[in-house]
View (spheres, one colour):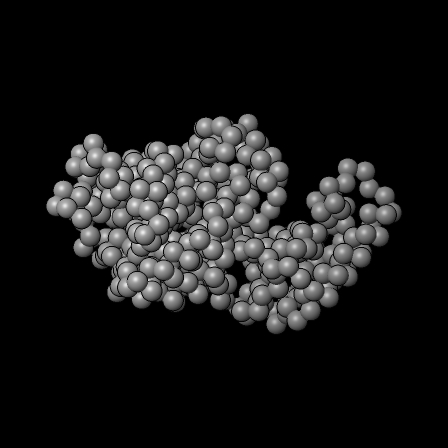
Length: 406
């Protein structure tokens, strides 16, 4: 690498995009093409960046396997930032193995960091932690090291491990400051703001309050029964019963918990849970069946007792009952939560992150657009969606991870 190319690389690494681009803008050799691609990515022109990186890989040729692998990793990073999460992981893993075998530990580690970040975005928390464990942070460059700790903080926040999240963010802030990269420093600051922003609403005996993420973690560790409408589960004393795949049971549990310590009438339950405008005997029979299933499911945590007019949720050990709900009410909250990160998402990436069908996501996006909450730009495979106004809370941190089959 000549002095001019090295200077351009250093400028891009420090966040000086224009300075780096000026040094290689008129050159067409392979290193210059790669650096121009990185510069265009920093400027937000994803398509042109990919074209330049692919041209660089072709120019390097098959003999320069390490350089081609680095170009692939740069292209994967562009796909990640542009929320195109469908890229094949096997190619990235092959590039990572090649770089590790050739002694390029920094770029091999960066490839691992990208895979961990992708896993975090689509809710694969165990996979993200496994990849992070395989990386030695000291081998990474400062920018990648900052990203490593940001992903670590993100996993901790999704797991409501606030102590670990704070420590990871402290290290990330130190790394970003040392790197003197404004973009990294802004990302760290934004994540810190997410950690302390309103994250959920708490309803106890008709009284409502707003909780931060740390408050949510403390509430779930407390002695009371918690019906968590953010992650669709019921918990008591650390024991968790997931109801994500049983929406009717969860709807009944939530309705009863919101009425506690009073009961909820059968008519209200039928109307709320089954969306029935005209009730008959079949609805009451179905409600009895679902109540029986809920009793068996909550065995050990709470009981559902019949009353003259309906049913009442009774926690064991005389514990109180609290209901956690998202900060806003919206039928398409899960999609809006992902769009709230400020990045432009493709509908296929949203479907992958939410573990649902593309058609369901497209329907949700159309409803959000009609309500003025989301908008799109581009067309075809280049179409991207963003939130029209960014909510001031990190609802994505309370999204349930994908439920394993079986």
